[in-house]
Amino acid sequence: MTEPTPTGSADDQTPPPPVEQQRAELAETVEALAQKLDVPTRVKSAAADTAHTAQVKAKENQQPLAAFGAAGVIAIIAIVLLRRRRRSKGKI
Image (cartoon, rainbow, N blue to C red):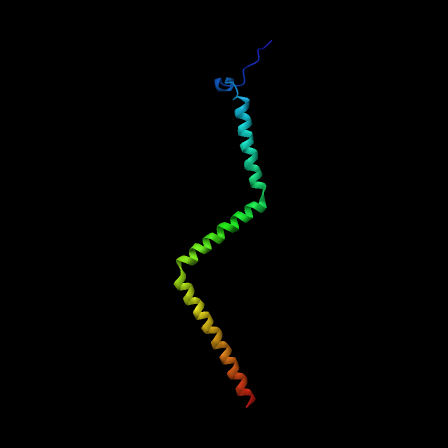
């Protein structure tokens, strides 16, 4: 009869890590999976990050934002005045 051949290297014969270490690693893996599956919390976190980034950029760019805001107000006023003029010309 033939003898069974070993199916591993010398590294395979090292003892497995202690049970406490395996449990700790498994707990970390489960926690990571739970965080990935918690979509509402991830969405809230992403929204908070985006809001914070927008606030920082708004503070950095206050002058351009104010200029664009003023230009927008002026454009709205000009549109309203032009419409009033056109309406008043048609009534005469």
